[in-house]
Length: 363
Image (cartoon, rainbow, N blue to C red; front, side, top):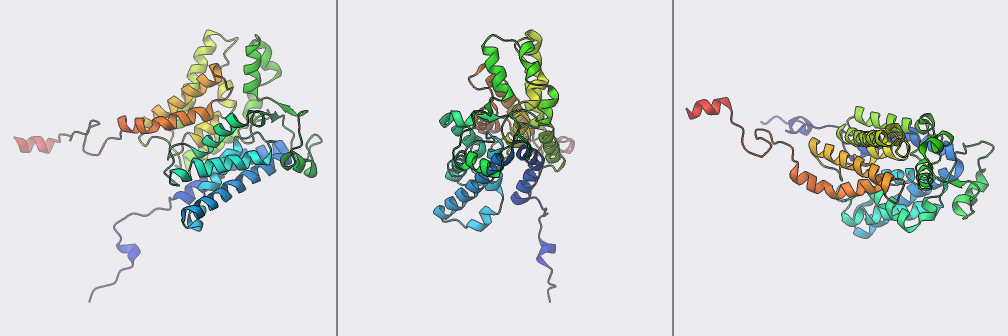
């Protein structure tokens, strides 16, 4: 009589807790400190925009799955739509109107994700597709930023006033301005030098802590770095892309600063300003749209860093993280084609390795 063995004990495969929901959950957990800081720093309008963007992403996912005839609950519960909306909200001006977040969420989920087949099938990072599309289509709304007005401070709008800002279309011209990257870019174009621009505008400490104007969740470099290190510790991401991206930006900035320090800022300025750390740890490391091999990831990260610096320094936009990510997403299949991981028992050209016992046998 055969002995019955529980299926869990007789399967030939090793099982682990790693899965899409757990990975998405860890990434969102890593984003919590920078997100909470951004919501506190920019007040109720930022909170409403954040919630509207997340709701738009979930609604777009539900409608897309229903239209495609796919089961809604399993796909909705994997966390990918929620994370996409979360990342998009992090890159938006904190006092943007609600429809910016909702339109961006629809673009990210429907156009950049579900049209390609859903989870794991998209060629480009959905949040960055939406970010670039919004920037091109609505440049005024996407380039209007506010100085930090911490929640419950005297300058911060109250609950009712914030609803009017986010949902009522009430203007806030008196509060609007540019990011550090944008203002430095503008004043350099007017013939000023960094020696006269930066002292009144920016310090490395303010950039690292995040007490500057900027997008909702990208101002605090220290909190984003903390979240990125957490992802590395949990092995959600690997070190190759962040190190290559940040190292390339730092090297280029150091070289250009050495050549002309009056017109090219040093490495620290670029590393703690804008979406550099958000891009390095949370966007460029997307496993679906980046190469699979370690060497390929190094090339991918270096390409992102190069494009970010070039766009910031010489192109028409003061920030280049989204554009760089999408351009390198397009290159990822090509990198995977030419830079492949070595197969066990073969060299990097795919030829079988010659072992000592094989040599002895041939003799």
